[in-house]
Structure formats: structure tokens, C-alpha cells
Image (cartoon, rainbow, N blue to C red; front, side, top):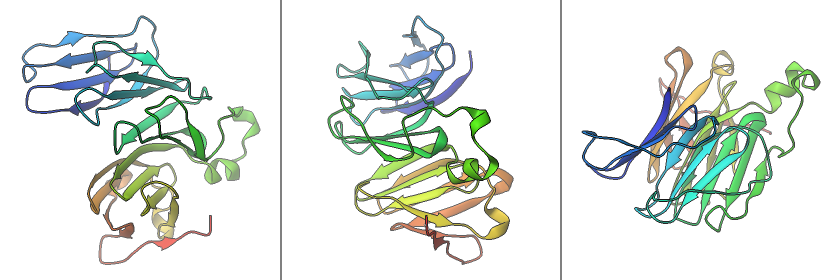
Length: 224
């Protein structure tokens, strides 16, 4: 099995997810692991625990799993899409976001029981129906992080969005021309500040919703 993501709750407890429905947990600092994998072979891409009892997992085919008992049991939540979801972030046990292919951003305010679309469409597109320009317009999103009022989303073709109102709205930023096709895969945020990283050694700092580029420049707000 390939493992794609991990969330550590403390020095002893962590959860990991991966392909073939892989879910594993440790409660002794990684000395031993307990297998909690699903019976089907769905690929799971991200796991987050906003507190010790509430956790969420995202994966392909619109999969969202939720636990309210610290991972003893997991329940599938209906999302309204079969699109692959790559990233999750929860600022509280109830309020969270999921991101995925075709520029999709979903939001929940009730612990994943219901979801609304903030960007993109829940409807799956046929690849042969998408032209190159449409693909650039709706690139995949791979990671999302929200901390208090601030948040960031990253993805394909230089996709970078931030929020300064707790995820109510998202502002898209345009990178310099030579970096607009950079695939960005990771984001980290602590309060008002954070970082994003991507292909070809790309990195940028996030400061109160602004995007600070290497060398002292700043990204500009996109018209989109």
C-alpha cells in the first residue's frame, strides 16, 4: 500500500491514509500500528483531526468519512459529487473545507453532514469534453488550510487562493508568468502566516492573505 497523508494529534497518536482504503493509527508514537482500513479499494488522500474525537478523511469518488468517537468508527458522509477530493481542512469540529479536481471547493458547517459548493461544480466532467483552456480555468486543487480567519488553497497551473474572512470567500492570485504553470501541492498555515510549495522548487509565503514571492515581490489579485 502507498500512504499519502498523516495527521499527528500528539507525540503518541497519529492517523495515516492511503490507497486500497488504507487507514492506520498509532497510539504509542509509531512503535505499533492498528489497521482500520476500509473493505473496498478506494484511494484516500487526506486525514485531519480538529480535536481528539472528531476526524475526517477525503478520497476519490467524492469520499468523505467522519468519526465522532476518536476513530473507533467511521461513517461515510454524502457530499453530492463523485469527483476526487484531495485535501481537507477543519477550523473547528463542525466547520471545514474539501478541495478536489476541476477547481472544486466544498464547505460544511455541520461536521460534514451537508456540503455547499464555493467554487467549481459537483457534476463530473468527461475528459474529452474539456479543452485545454477549460482545464486551465478549472485546475485541480490539492491542498487547503484554514486557521482562524485566514486560509489558503493550492493546485495545478499556479492555482493559489486565499481567504481573510474565515473561508466565506476566496480570492484568486495570479503568479508571475514564468510560474503560472507550476503545480502546487502543499500548504501550511499557522494563524496569519504560512507557506505554499510546488514543482521546480517553487515556494511562497502567506501573510494575512497576501502572497509574498521569493525576492520580495507579491502576487497580484486575479480577475477570476
